[in-house]
Image 1 (tube, rainbow, N blue to C red):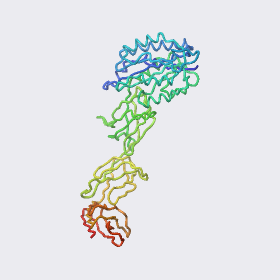
Image 2 (tube, helix red, strand yellow; image 1 turned 120 degrees about the vertical axis):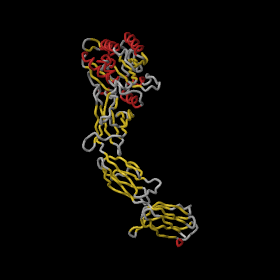
Image 3 (tube, one colour; image 1 turned 180 degrees about the vertical axis):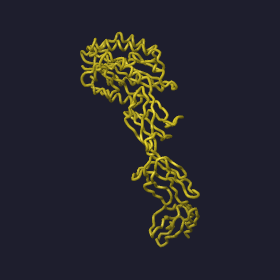
Image 4 (tube, rainbow, N blue to C red; image 1 turned 60 degrees about the horizontal axis):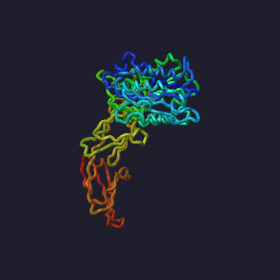
Amino acid sequence: MRKLILVIALLISGLFPAGSLHAQNRNQQQPLTRILFVFDASFSMYGRWQTGMKMDIAKRLFVQFLDSLQGTPNLELGLRCYGHQYSLQPQRNCEDSKLEVPIGKPNVAIPAMKKRMESIVPKGTTPIAYTLEQCGNDFPSDNVNSRNIIILITDGIEECGGDPCAVSLALQSKGIVLKPFVLGIGLEGNFESLNCVGKMYDISSEATFTQVLNIVVSQALNNTTCQVNLLNNQGKPLETDVAMTFYDQTTGVIRYSYMHTMNHRGVPDTVILDPLSTYKLVVHTIPAQVKENIVITPGIHNIIALDAPQGFLNLQVAGTNNYTRLQAIVRKSGDMNTLVTQDFGSKQKYIVGKYDLEILTLPRIYMKGVSIAQSSTTDILIPQAGTVSIFKPAEGTGQVFLEEKNTLTWVCNLDDKRTNENLTLQPGNYRVIFRTKAAKETIYTKEQKFKVEPGGAVTVKLY
């Protein structure tokens, strides 16, 4: 049975190179990190690897590294083992998995873990999917904002027909754990089936243990700095003052939301990201700009760049705005999907490009292909509206039409239960057609023309 010893525990053996844990993000409170080590104690751990038996090597390195975790702030540890309670004969037990040391403070958990590892003997099968599922219940549900991490230590693949990848994805999607670590010792055979469980490391020799463990521990215990460069159309990171959201690319879970900011030096400010996830970044410009499959490199300052050139659209009414609230529907040019509705009297940022406007006046005003240019303002000025007071002899049905070039274009319907009403209309020539509810013959239709001037007031009497 080809298996990979996910010597996750080992990672921590090189935990504190030059005090890196304390040096990183000095000014930011380190979040509580809970690490659950999942140790493979199945029968195949009797196999040999380099200088000895897999189980002996894994135990020795695991116990050595545990000592380096003593005194680590904001850290809790636990241990779950599988394949160690039941023998393969007369038949394998696919629920052979047990939380041996509950998650707790290092000064309590580490001695308990070391003592328990002394008596662990390989016996049974490899129920990875079932074990991962049980791990979801091992982390305390105390509403503490913690980073829950599984470090799987195994030398084999699933042997009980389960789907470890689906279980891992479900745990991540529910926000129970971050992406697990899977470390392999002396990998042989096909282990692609575990690539989707978590971030996998191939430890090819005992000599590389410490190096790999330092890398993994750095990722498990520390966040990483990053800046987002929002580029204008000259490729300069000068765009800012917009919200941005980081999603987990695999699960779709929201991980972080920030308001993009320029710092006191005039460059994009630094944010903190967990390097364990692959991200999708959505910058909430209009329309939104998206960058997918962002991988954060631990231990360095990462720069994420995406194009977000913007200009302004300024909507104004000539003279006095006598609308209670006037808005324009803004769409990308040629696209009927609404981006936003923008109020008149306001100035709004948009990504550089062409847009179609539908202004909600009576009658509607349509503007096609309005251009927004980098760092400039496009002004839209519409005429001041007029007011029309329509008086009816009785309740009835009526409609208002705009009259242009001997053609009537519908504007609105009148309220058939009111005998007078006020309308705010754009300048132009109009015609109202009306019949009272009591009139049962078409010949009693009333028709009247009227003209609206900018800022003017018109009275229309239909009797």
